[in-house]
Image (cartoon, rainbow, N blue to C red; front, side, top):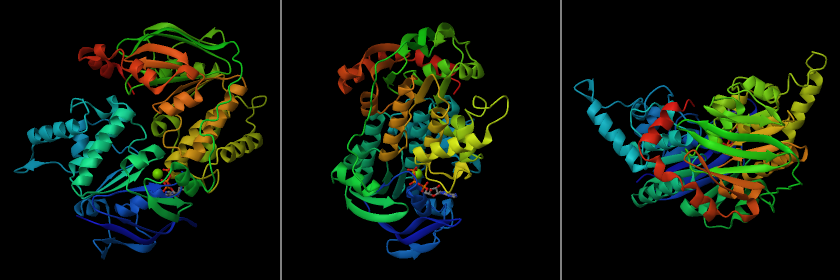
Length: 509
Ligand SMILES: Nc1ncnc2c1ncn2[C@@H]1O[C@H](COP(=O)(O)OP(=O)(O)OP(=O)(O)O)[C@@H](O)[C@H]1O
Ligand SMILES: [Mg+2]
């Protein structure tokens, strides 16, 4: 039974106080939720709890005793386990190797592989992840990688478990699994810190909520408090309409996908998206939504089928030509595919528009900078300035930049893969407004999302994928969570062993 307290801690980067005299006590057997907008300081707070950062002011207490947690190793020895917001796995290593990274079981000085295998299997089973432990991490999608992270933290049998947005990339079923595990840990007296931008999860798992705004402590209230109150504390105002979709009358077909097939991943998928339309793509993790978007964007090749943009066939597997044709993609894995972490905010925002906006062969630097500044402001990106290094922004603010990059480019077809993952409720509405702007300008949008309320609230039409097939389509007005879920599992029988294997092998994410 361990109690962890931060007492008046602050963290200063440069001349910004990103956490400002915050006090939090995490009790055994309780889930303490940290809530706040992107950049409010949540991850920074948990990094001080786990030995990554040292507080510049204030101190830490465990069971009432003041102490210093000098590094991650020390935190682990104190029984503190962390699931970080950004994935920390080594892509080239297997699931098992990642699970034991930094903590290999040895027998008489030798690595004990049999024990490793047994413990790794048990860890995956516990969270319901059905994968071979020798599968390389990079063969898994983001959601499954996240499940492995969770398994790894659980293996430590910690007395304090910190979860920084663990559910951001999980579907409902996987979230439920995690919440059940959290209930069990609670019963065992484990103290937990939980961060999420999904307000509905707070009442489900939380006991108390501490709200931060601009690094400052706003208050601590019961997790059962109404969502409207949480929102008001977090953003300082009410948000009346969470899904402000304004649909116009759709125009001509802008994107046409016919008979798209990639063996083992995509099975004869056909659909059209008209100018001004938002089509939502729903389905379970691994249903093939990401694969379809990547094939359209030219990031992956395919075996048969045709993709047309604005009436012209786009060559397969050619990103440059696809971008020229007017297609943009906001990928699910922003860290590896969407952004250059070492580059500035301005550079990342300008990536997609540098060439198209050049005048007579010259890059329009002044205009470009003004557009970058405008976009950053519209998206309300929290930063010191547009020259700040992208890698030092908070997770949600990085997501806004990927989005901003394409919204600046006036694309004909915008492909979104989990566009609001990790984005706070206020900024989410800002992203939805940008989607409205893209369609108002005649763009077509395809949005893959595991967030069903988002799919139902922001799409004009909903397509459902199940195990590589398009299993249904309906106007959003007629779609319900139940209808979508039953279509999402409709092709699951075929998923039994052999086909799932081939999905894994041919996936080159
Ligand atoms: N290493 C760093 N150098 C400079 N600034 C940093 C650094 N780490 C964090 N920051 C800044 O501190 C602020 C708080 O960041 P933090 O990651 O704690 O936010 P968060 O509440 O976790 O947000 P999100 O919901 O987006 O994950 C942000 O403005 C961020 O840009
Ligand atoms: Mg964070």
